Length: 123
Length: 123
Image (cartoon, rainbow over all chains, first blue to last red; front, side, top):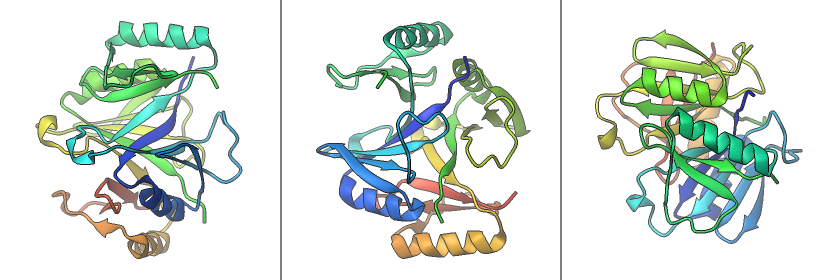
C-alpha cells in the first residue's frame, strides 16, 4: 500500500510565536491539542485527510540540545495496520528509537541513517 | 493565498541506500535530478501537483556536522510570486540564510527560531 507523510513535526522553544509565524506564512489555521503543542492545518482540514499535510510545533525546553528538530510522521488506519507497518519498516532497516517518549499513541523509529520519524496510531 | 509545503528535504550520507529505504517504506517511485540527489515521488506524480508531497534525499559529505538534516520547501508559481513570498516571509520575521548554497534557483531562509527552509522557484 502506498503511504505518504501526513505531518511534519518541528520542535520549538516558543511554539506559540513560531506557530504564529508559520500560520501567517502559510495562511493556515491553528489549534492546540495539548499544552505546548500548536497544530497547523490548511483551512477546512478534517483529519484524516488523505491528501493534506499538517505541521505540528512542539515545545521542548532546549532546542539547541536536540539533534533533529524536524521529522516526518506516517499515518495508520488501525491497530493492525500500525503493527504491520512497523514490522515492515523494521524489515527494511528501521529501528525503534527511545527519545524518552514514554507511553504514547505513536511509535518512534529511526531510518537507516538515524533520522527519527513516527508511525502514528489510528485516530 | 494559502500555501503548503511541497517537499521534505533530507540530507543523507548515502542517498542511494536511504532513498531505497524510503521508497520501499512509502512504496513510492524514485528518480534523480542530479548526481547526489534522489527524488522520491508518489506513483503517478506530475510536478507541480497541488496536493502531493515529495521527498528529496541530498548527499552531503558529513551529516554529523549538519545542524538541521530535514527541512521543508515552499513552492512558487512565477518569478513575481517568488519575490512577493520572500518579501512577505521577511516581513513575518524570516531571514535570508547562507548555507553555502551559491547561485541556485531557490531562496534559503530561516524561520524565527533559525530553522532552515527554502522557497523554490517556479518550474
